[in-house]
Length: 122
Image 1 (cartoon, rainbow, N blue to C red):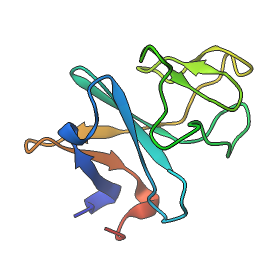
Image 2: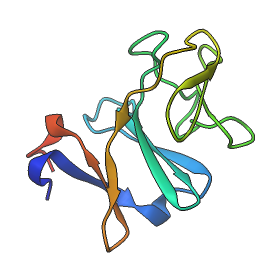
Image 3: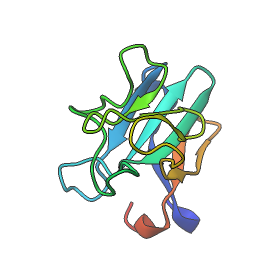
Image 4: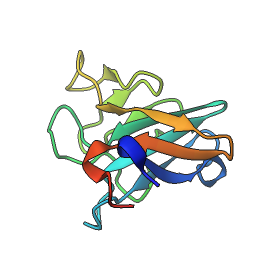
């Protein structure tokens, strides 16, 4: 189910197009990682602002994007990040970036993320 650290998170259709979805992998009540679905691509990141490591990005569940859906935003600091690269484009963390997680889409349209720390848990 999660050979080599690959963990199935959801189906592509479970993430709104031009939208995001977070995943609480530890059952802590806060999302550990999130996926952003931009048309034909899905990008994955750790839910932690590089300006203040450990600070989560959304102000409510799955609110990872700005109002226009054109950037990831940290609602605590106002930092904005490029969706495709995770690089900070405005805010207090210019020059830094979100921690990307490798993702792949399987033939059945399920989205898998490489999360070695969760190998054997799913």
